[in-house]
Image (cartoon, rainbow, N blue to C red):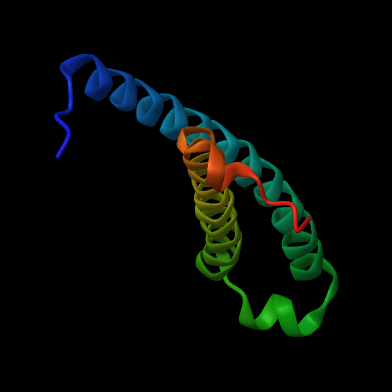
Length: 103
């Protein structure tokens, strides 16, 4: 059994912090875009469609927009974390596992 050094743990912790920060930024950018993309048709439909005007009060409109933003944030952040974890696990893998060719 091998021992884990303090430097190795510090390196892994720094990589995890970097990964979470990058995922947070990517999620925030996606949430901002999704907010605008959801707000424009929601607010426009409330002004133009009689059904939406009658059934979507301001709370309902805010719920639609914030749900889309929250989903975008978590989906993009999760995908970013998974892709970075996959990349880092591939980088740390032994050489015989990195050869994925079928020759």
